[in-house]
Image (cartoon, rainbow, N blue to C red; front, side):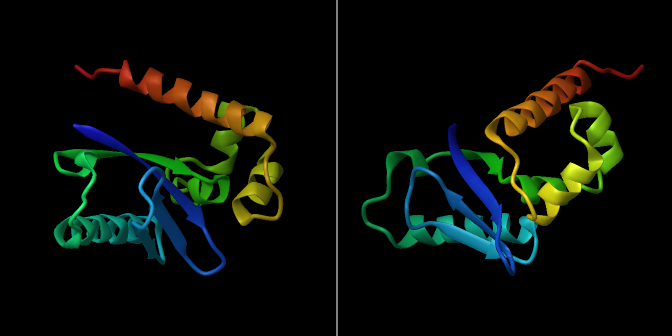
Length: 131
């Protein structure tokens, strides 16, 4: 199974999604889910109508999503409140609001800090089992 890296970013009016290593396949939508679906539909059309399809696109595909900070914070806002993210990451809620709105951009160090905290939390959840 091939894994395609997909970047999702929030624009002024909608979300965009594109495959990082394969130019020409894009998606957009009012929501992240709409952009993902549009990208998947675009990929199907690309494979159907293109003569030189990269081998990576001929089998089963899974996606690895890379979000910009505003898109991540908005998309997962129904799961992570700003106060929960503050406890999890150590990044102040007010600053998280600024990142979510696009008023300011996190430094690379802050992005790594948030990424690390989210991955650690996901790993902990992955080890939880119910009886």
